Length: 218
Image (tube, rainbow, N blue to C red; front, side, top):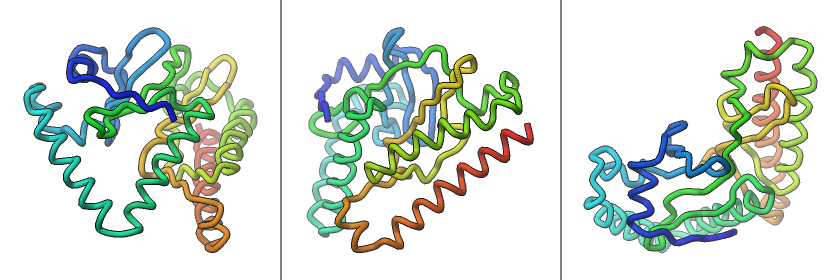
């Protein structure tokens, strides 16, 4: 995982000056340049973001760091969740889904990733696709999922809103894999709890079937 510590000035620029290209439940996506975008976890600094006041930032970060420290001390399970998140981000960096993980004062504040300028969300490209394209698209999504499964990563919230597609080539990119809905755990954990792995696979496959049915209906 490539970890980058950013300055307050850089974070202020990301939050308030860059063009917003998307906004989700936890992160706002900003265009950095023609090749790169930034996802900032604005919910962790909601007062700073909502009030557009960078002077509120350090108090929010100090509170978040204090809470994080207490949570990590509170139980072994909390530490394992924290370590698994770091390992998941390292794997996603290795696979090219993430370029860098951004920190401010040691607190994870966002990620840098590629900007796919010729891609649309699958949900916004339905009118550009034909029914004959569905089989090819589903197979490409399935191939992406199988690669993630081989690293013990399971995107439980897979949907047409977190899949990007190039309408001409049908190349596929999965997004939002850094969020809490995407599960990662160790080989040891799944070896001891095979039913958990089976449940995760069932969830992902069920969502893939829903996507297939939705595309065929459209």
